[in-house]
Amino acid sequence: MAEVRIEHLYKTYKGGVEAVKDLNLTIKDGEFLALLGPSGCGKTSTLRMIVGLEAITKGDLYIGNHRMNDLEPSERNTALAFESYALYPPLTVFDNIAFCLRARKMDSAEIKRRVMDVARILEIENILGSRPVELGGGQKQRISLARALVRDPDVFLMDEPLSHLDAAQRAHMRVELKRLHAESRRTTVLVTHDQLEAVAMAERVAVMNLGVLQQVGTFDEIYNHPVNEFVAGFIGEPPMNFLSCEPISEDGTVGLRAADGSFKFNLPAELGSKVAAQNLKQVKLGIRPIDVIAKHAAAQNSEPEVQGRVFTYESLGEEGQLAAKVGSYDVLIVTPPSDAYDAEKPVWLGLRSDRIHLFHADTGVAL
Image (cartoon, rainbow, N blue to C red; front, side, top):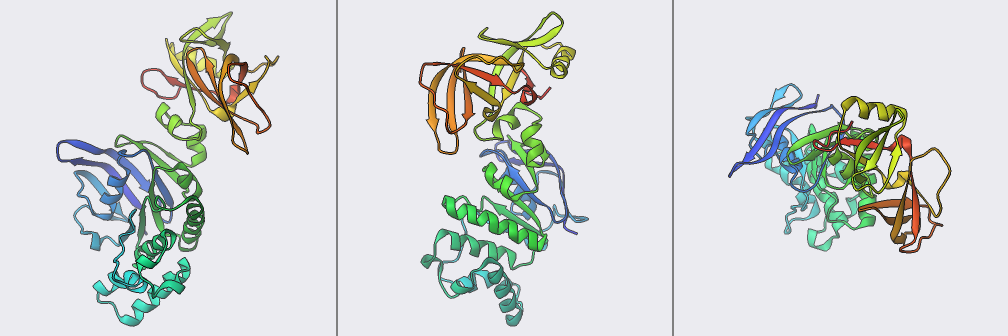
């Protein structure tokens, strides 16, 4: 069993820099989990503590039922595919892959069998006699992955493995890595700042920021039910719009008024009751660009609607992106590809009431 269990884990570097703070996370046996977050959020430090390249400042790390804190990397049966390939230039592809097995003084026949098996899985059999300098980025990435996998690890870890590849290679490698996991069902941890990579490959996503785990779940759970303003703004492309508002009550109906007075509207009953129950003076309204409906004229319907002015409009083929000014706020809207909007013209924005998110103005926690 290769379940990874992290309990109250801390990593503090010289100078008192806390890279990871009180991390609690369980990665199930055979699961593919992505650690997702911006640069400096602590995800790579977490990965390196799992593999043993960084000492744990405080807390416990278990793989299966075995505590790993005091074990050397070679004793953990984990394998790490680095961001920068880290191949040996003078060696052939075969020798690069076989290097760790030879260091273990494994039988040559077994070495050849393992190398050929992993080469076949990653489809690099035809370049085993080549040297890294003769190969492209996608091939080098496959070699880096093969060198990690040939060890037959309990836990396979990847640190930004696709960051040096072009768009077409990244798309192809995402498919290959997902296929590889489906075949092996090996516990796999991916570190990335690219949410598309996380969505395409991982079964669950753990979002980190400033060394703190923010939320863990499937991408659908994180996208549709973010626990705080950071997760809501980090997940989704284009990012969520945020507008500062004041709760108001008129004729027994709870609504929102923009902090700058540029708009007001009533909230759906369920959401309004949540706001009223907390007696808040100010909240952040969050709405994704895909959940805003732009119109050239006011619509007569029950959905909340605000008036704005077109700032810019971009036609991107499959969709359009409209940037509008609503009072002092910038609002981004995804539109159908057939729409067109002229700068400085008025525009009416309908907000899907079932897709409105509200956050505490001070703490950022979702209501």
